[in-house]
Image 1 (cartoon, rainbow, N blue to C red):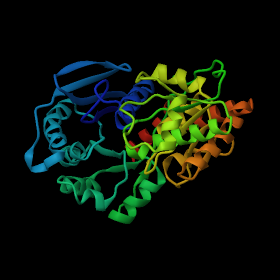
Image 2 (cartoon, helix red, strand yellow; image 1 turned 90 degrees about the vertical axis):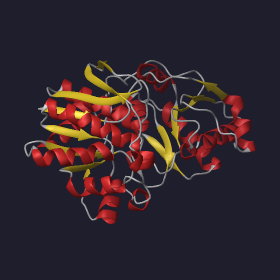
Image 3 (cartoon, rainbow, N blue to C red; image 1 turned 120 degrees about the vertical axis):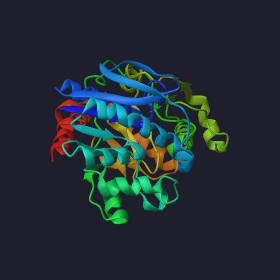
Image 4 (cartoon, rainbow, N blue to C red; image 1 turned 90 degrees about the horizontal axis):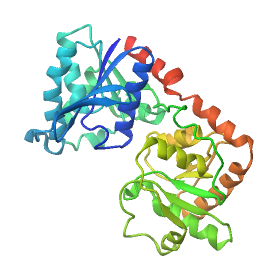
Length: 360
């Protein structure tokens, strides 16, 4: 099957969850026997291989003004459509609204092609109705062949807000790349592998928990391994936690896997998270996790013996970290985490489900 995936941004320029999803899905599709290619954009045009996937980067020219802040995506969609037409794919799998809308239009003149869209956030009508590209998004909801959502809460919201059933399809993890192995660090380490500057990621709660644990004579270190700068409005308690911090400026998957393997606990106290890929990556390395108990993506990935859920305050996060450190010290925990992550392996589980959705 020939599949073209499209997304405005890609590695190495941007390394967020959507870009990771695009590259890793494309790589898994190729490993499982499909002809998958990625079309994206960049300041300068370029072609190369990423994870053994051919990537075409179109030169980013500017905005289509009628779409305001979404105009860059609309301009990319207009320019990538002729490339998709020339490739004659069986599936156009789009990862942003503008190129997904273009896919629905192309499908009308090429009935044999499937148009698929993955919503990497929450399909909130209230949010999208405030955007200048709301008509494009409405077209996607109405006309796309398959509307994939990363979690059940996202599918539920699509049905509630738009009246359309979504297909719940999680992201995956390459368990071979993240099976770090090796001994944990001698001192219990709390790893925060997310964006430092984004408020909803709640790095301040990790630092508050570290300060509370150290005040209780629990010996720990905190490793921060995300992009961005620490917020300026950290609480006084969080600033006390900075004494435990070591910065690990890494974006490379292999380096990150090594950090997961050495850490005792991965802490992701973020809110409004649709999935939580780092939770699976941590488990694939045998490392338990701490997440918020909010009923959304990350909390749904945690099972008994693989992590701890908690309330969104420093004391609760500290107590959860203490419990997760005890989990990490228990030898069977690593195997439980790895076995659970294997349920989301790209090649053996998730990609076959996605291919099945292409064929419906």
